[in-house]
Length: 320
Image 1 (cartoon, rainbow, N blue to C red):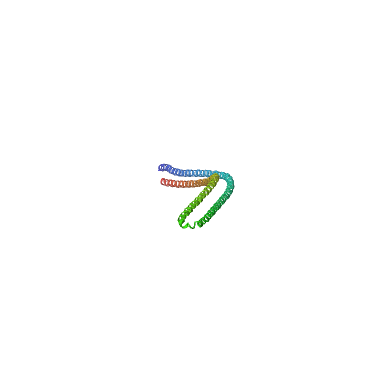
Image 2 (image 1 turned 60 degrees about the vertical axis):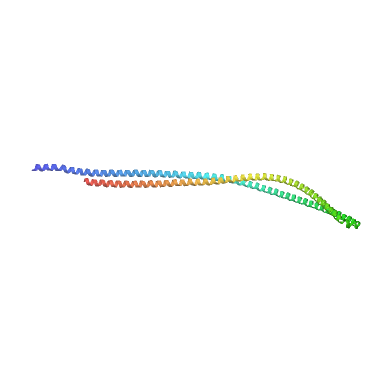
């Protein structure tokens, strides 16, 4: 009986040690796996933090470089703008001086034109006065001739009347017989005299008219020649003024183009500044999005690790 008890004790002892060993091994493995996972998680978090710090340093470095580039660009733009403003000021000053010179030339030309116009007006008044005096003199001469002719005719008529009266006294006795014949003769004579007088007057008027027309034609020819010369001179001056006006118009167009170029340059400069601002804003937005993605990745990693640990604990509990 004693031998059986001893045998039983020997057989139970190894079973108890194996169970304990299995329990201790399971706990050690679980603790080791848990420590391994925690270390892996810590190492991963350290790598993420190091990566974030490196990225933050890179971002800070890029920001500094971007700020330096922006300052350099602003400085270059400011120098360029200063040079262009100085060049523009010199051009405007040159244009202003040319404009002043053109104004002085235009004023001088206007004064010369006014002086020439006054001279022309004075000459025209003189010519008109001369023509008026000639017409008046011609009218006076014609009137004088007409009076002389009328006086001569009146004297002739008077002499004829005297002769007729004498003849009438002499031929009073024969008057009744020859009265009809006499009236006819007198009427015929009067008609011939009237006709002759009219012919003389007509001839005189024709000669006077021809002379007057010759004088007027000569004066008109002289006036036309003078006017032609003046018109030619005026055309030359007008052409010169037109050329100067065309030159001034071209200068104004160049100035307008210069202003348009300045406006275009300002717009381009504003667009460049806006593009730089947009680039910086996009970079900031990209950094925010990357930070959000990193935060989200870390959160997802934490959730995954938590779920895996819980699953491992459940499996471990089931095994136990």
